[in-house]
Length: 310
Ligand SMILES: O=C(O)C(=O)Cc1ccccc1
Image 1 (cartoon, rainbow, N blue to C red):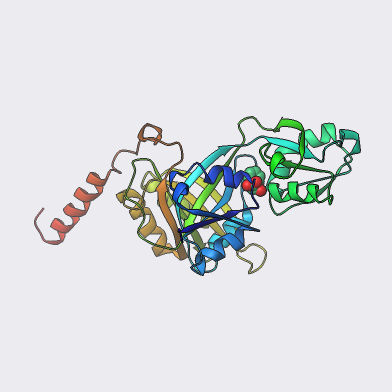
Image 2 (cartoon, rainbow, N blue to C red):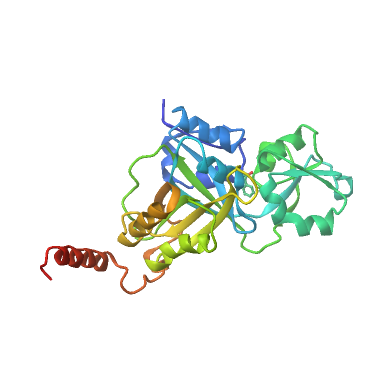
């Protein structure tokens, strides 16, 4: 049996389209799952090698189900990311017209991406959330709703017609997907990498978040995502999901993580992996004094001072 990758299904999701851009999917069995937690649990319990799930979009930020799954439970690690440009089609059963649409459905993350279009074209339609955009299309096929926002490619799969295509409130809306597996050694640095972590503060004090961010700033590490998530322990209790530019084997990233480990209650490492679409030219120039060589020669100097050999 080939190794399998689970993904947010059913067939015809944007997630599936993004997953199929990874060359190794040619030699993997791709298994659609009903939800992000189900896709990730199959990895946790050893049924699947990896899971492919949406994690962030450029319109609303983090996909909270995915972040919460990565924040808690058995640790998992991110190995790859894929960025996909997204526009929606309005899928209906053949013969449905715009005036006949009373109910619309899609994944909750789709709503902020089509809100203005809905206000302008279907102001009275009732929105119902679906487990994914393709699941919404499936529910329209079953007659549960009148229309679904999904990829145009999902129409044929579910016997639907695209009444409208190219729907997107924001130009260049992109969704970011990640390939998640069980913890193992991260791939070697590619030259344009990203490191994901979750931080829990030790205590609540003025400037607490600034202290955490200061660990990155002091080492010249650029941040690419900062999203707070409730810990569930009451109002005001948050952990922080952070993506930082660089690889854990870069000295400045490792030093920032060590600083965080010392001052945080808990740090969860979620992986170092190549940035989608990023080449070395895309990486911010590190601040002076933050290269691997400079960290190493500073450490060497301290060791010589300790030895009286300066
Ligand atoms: O992959 C899908 O089709 C999903 O349901 C997740 C999603 C939601 C909104 C935009 C892109 C992907």
